Amino acid sequence: MTAAPFKFDEVGYWSELKLEIVEKYGSAYTTAFANQKGLKKYYIDAFAGAGIHVSKRTGEQIEGSPARALKVSPPFDHFYFIDMDADKTNYLASLCKDRTDVTIHTGDATQHLTQKLLPTIRFEKFNRALCLLDPYGLHLDWEVMQQAGQSRAVDMFLNFPVMDMNRNAIWRDPGKVPQGATERMTRFWGDESWKQAAYAESPQQNLFSGPDLIKQGNDAIVRSFRDRLKNVAGFRVVPEPLPMRNSNNAVVYYLFFASQKPVAQKIIDGIFARFRR
Image (cartoon, rainbow, N blue to C red; front, side, top):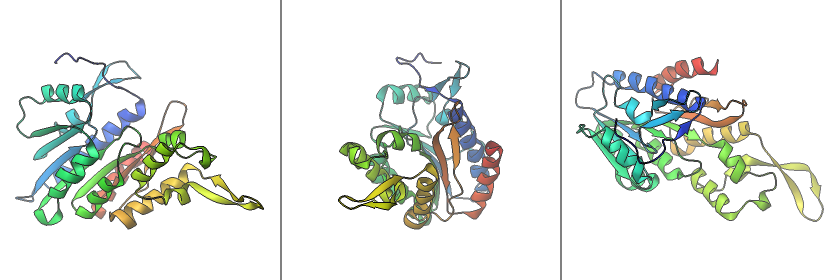
């Protein structure tokens, strides 16, 4: 294995579970399309990293999502890996140096996906894609999710970074949230309707400043976003997302899955059920 000029990302147990889930679904996904001649199956990893992580639990190196996707059988027809960090993409390229079915891009995932890659993936073009969106916090724009849904050709895993939202954008006092964090939240959500999801008016009103706002729990925010993926982005099925918890049992993020196919929901419900227990 090529020596890395940087430290591999350390990942918690919840991230190891996510990797296992995506790998299991990837195999089911390519198997479902195995007999459809002429149909192209793509794998897209928008925050691919270096292809190798270090487990916080064991201290050992583990394969990241790109390395696992490359081993899925039946195989995908092509793989697209994207990351902002040139050191990581260079290392990933060294792992894939003998592969002719891999394209690696260094740069902003939102820009590359919306301007270059997703416009080429459409139901009518007889191609399909499994897309993993695992952003570093809120560093993803809604336009990516909307294009994926409206393509009618993409199955999507999404890391919904609720811990980052609560730390940086959804505070008990919304008036104190830095403008940059509010703008980032709006770009991720797609418009300012996240404020209605995140806050409710108190039944007790202040005569001088109007109604007080009460911060809502994660369930209300997740429920609203799930509805948004279906009713705005256009995904036909969006199962109940899987809460991913750290060692303190706090939810770090929710793993969303979205698709156009009811059969995809049956597959992911079976996979998610194992991990909910």
